[in-house]
Image (cartoon, rainbow, N blue to C red; front, side, top):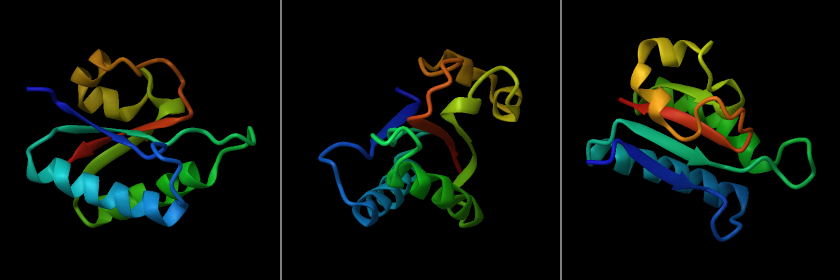
Length: 111
């Protein structure tokens, strides 16, 4: 069984509140069906300084953690051997995004 649940927030170019609703719904679904990790594809933004969906994800992940929907998270630029998440969940090294410094993704551990 695939451990990763992929959430593509860029698909269909949604407005920010639609992307936020999708993120909440998809994390809830991932938890319900027993997925261990979520790969959240939010993009970096076309302006070159980070987009509104990426910023929304940065603000929403701590809320999802406080609501006990996720245990922990890491942003793509920090998803490397130095991050605490890798030390706690070494299996995450098997993910294709590991050590890529990808500003357009985030990884969450489902609670």
